[in-house]
Amino acid sequence: MRRRKNGTTYYTTLGQAAATMEEDLGYLKWAKNSGCPGFQSGRIYPKECIRWLDSHRREWPDRPNWLRAIDNMEMQEHQRRRTQRG
Image 1 (cartoon, rainbow, N blue to C red):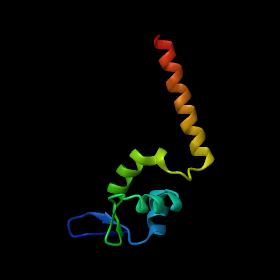
Image 2: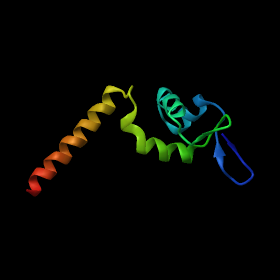
Image 3: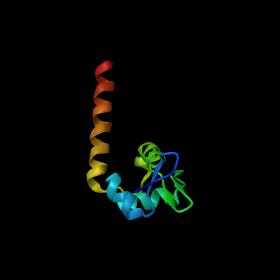
């Protein structure tokens, strides 16, 4: 992890970013190839990455099964609440 003069934190390798951000390396590679704005000039800016990742998590085609299970549970809960409202 490094800091620019203005205090912005960035990483220089995907492995370093994945370990520190506690994200799957494959997920970060997918994000980079999908146009995540946190990847700039060989640097990885975690704030920009986290914002983008949070809004694109369901689009990741290689999501692990445990993450898909969580998504399914959230969807079932949403549908249950919807039917209770009438």
